[in-house]
Image (cartoon, helix red, strand yellow):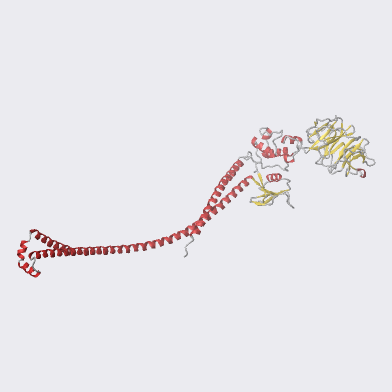
Length: 587
């Protein structure tokens, strides 16, 4: 088998190490987020269990002040003049559901008393302006509110109407037109050539319609233009008003009857239509369509809508504060009114401890079933609707959704899903926090799986490297065994070599020794010859060799006897040395 590519494995391992470092850092950061998300969710659950009304049922009595304050707050009240007192005998005798009903009434009734008690302001979309019997101007923050003198320069005012901007006033004083930019500002003086009128109204385009002192209608295209006659034959008008749709209402004829024309334009070409509705002497139409009239007793009377005059007049409006006494009336827009500041719910929320609802833009929530739907105008209204509906666990809101209602209330449990940019998923705060926990948990799981995958791949690489190391180890063991065998062979050869070497050395030494013995013996032989030569020469000096030898042999004994002792010693030593050398070389 082919060995693994070690360099490739090393490069992959290096890349995996870097990936592990990145993933470990990401995992650490996610773990911090996860712990915080869990902490937030746990704290929210603790808060939910500590709700002030959590221990009461709908039939419970003897509600604590903390719970009563919570009921009042959930209804939207708290800044007004009315303060809930749980210790009162009335409150102690009421059930939880009864107190919720009462708070709902304070929050949703639009009369002056309830608005002031709950919110601390009248909460009326328009302000009623009246001309007192003393010729001065008074304001009234709703039909049940008290009249309050306006601190301006008004004197002997005869009639008033609202300017076409809904803020300013056009009035009549001394039968001349006067005007002011806001209801509480001062009049700017008489408009030139504006005499003589007893009632006035202004259309949406600025056209001014006036009732002359002859009880006929006149008009001018704008305030500063001249009057032009716009009457019909036989008419007799005392007061006039222009409705939001441009139709004209007049008090005329006998007995304070109402008459109408379809438009304030081309009045002379239209016929008056009798509406009956006796008996008032001055009228105005509020922005919400309410027809307000001043009765012959100088008090206020109303009809719910100017488009339907079939019912009787309601009034006088003296239930909380008297409406007397005025001779003329109009309305102006309330600059401080905000509809969103007031509870618009259609039913009480008995689940007082319902969880807080939150919204997620670009998402939807469908639950498992439908529990209702409505055309809520705002996201807040849809949230409130879900909170007030039994079984509602969430909702989907889309104010621009075609062919369906804007607020879809859902029951059951499901996940939040992706929607359009105009969609809003409405869920409980607890579910939102839990979803955050689940989302981070999933991210942690994904990162953990990536880490495990890298570790598993590294284990495979380690296994491959382990096999490679096993092969190399086996190879090394084989080589080691071969080396040991070679070492033994070398050791044996070395021993043999050493034996041969020693034998060679011994042989060399023997040869050398014999060589030196030979040399020595040769030297001794030479010396011996030399001595014999001298001996012979000395005994027959002057004779021939033969004669010398003969004579020497004959006279040898004598000659030897004549040799000195030292000569004998030398010869003896040479003989012994020769014997010793011979004996040494023998070994």
